[in-house]
Length: 130
Image 1 (tube, one colour):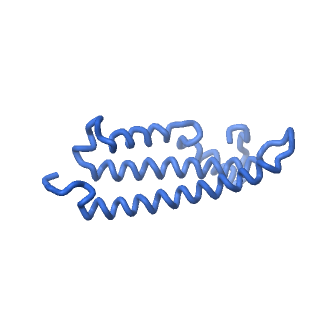
Image 2 (image 1 turned 135 degrees about the vertical axis):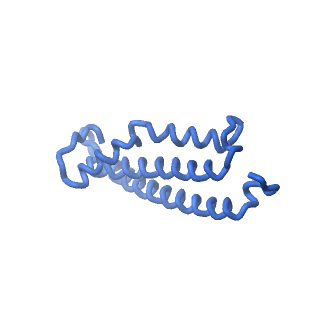
Image 3 (image 1 turned 90 degrees about the vertical axis):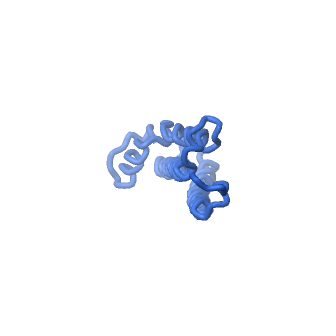
């Protein structure tokens, strides 16, 4: 990119990295809060019962949000990496691919928002899918 500075030495990268870290910490805190709450509920579930669908949906939303936020962060940092990020040997390339592959998993795919949105709006929903 025409500079003798490393990526880490560039002010734009430093600012973007700090913003990415803040976004990641927020997504992680949300995920951990939902995980803790779900675990707390799960400990009290009696044999033959399941975790309530609302609790499963809350955890699923947190998983999806964390996965999508991670992919967005990787995309932003990948873009800042310029041409160097294109090569397979680049850590940015690998993380970009891995993070975007995760967004296609059935638990965190875009359809999760529709499914959990239906529950939030009290619309009929196939509970087994949550």
